[in-house]
Image 1 (cartoon, helix red, strand yellow):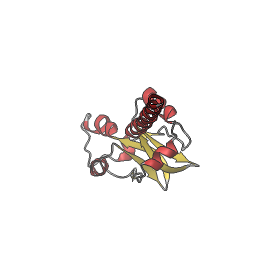
Image 2: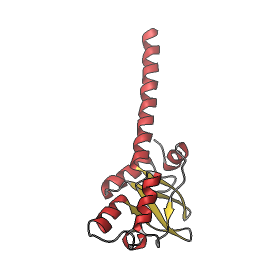
Image 3: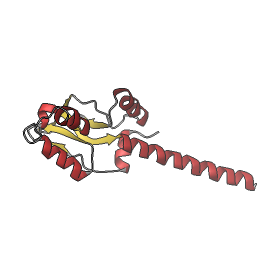
Image 4: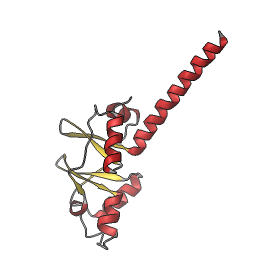
Length: 146
């Protein structure tokens, strides 16, 4: 089974971050432009929180706050649950399912090194299953041809 480091290596992409002073409209436009569902909120390279589509919906739109005047720091999820590069896919899946979250920042020695999403985990699982199917198919063809 894969770990977070292997999953990030298979699909390298930069982690998109935002300042806690940024407006939520700026954050929403950034997420929309990057086609992502969450931003890591950082200040001086220190992770302060995470800002997700759900935060925007529940903490800004649903209560009629002005997204141009509301800062990310005011509505972000503080102290986000994070993964480590050596966390397994199963560990991440369990945390995401139990906490009902879709994104985990990845921290290594206090430094932000990536972001993993439910989509990444599903893609990794599908790849692993495809490899297993291919291996079994090859095994069966060899066994039947003997």
